[in-house]
Length: 190
Image (cartoon, rainbow, N blue to C red; front, side, top):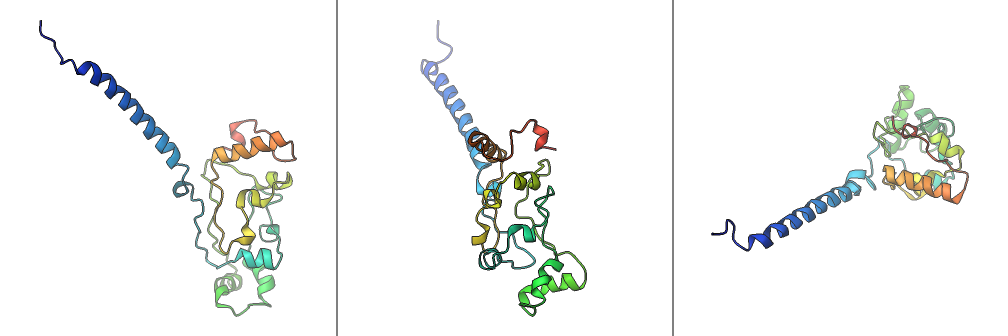
């Protein structure tokens, strides 16, 4: 009786199946890697702001603390952004005619907010509380990087769930006064 399939099929079909499984695995690994790239996490992306605010000058040169401009970080879930009134506290006296501060003066004199753009923008389903971290001794630079060396603020951390969990695990292992073990998913997810 004649064979239904040629002999080479006995070798080719298992090889094709193995190649298919390997290809599927590569696709999954590739997608996992892709979602962690700066292209997706927006790591190192400089966000255009309405005012050219140079953190190097204000933080490093003038010694202004992060919480001076981000005043609600210690007691609120959000860090807050500086108001035109806060900026004009200094800039009414210095650089008061600078073209770089037109938007600040406009916002101040028309009693409007400065339309700052988020640099560290978490997904809507994520809840992050600045005050818990600040009150437990987590330095601003732990998440935001060396802002004092940035002309324009950029996100330097991937802000992925894995990145946050790694920090929490390290702080628990080191037994330093940092945020404690997360008890439920709803601690960070809405």
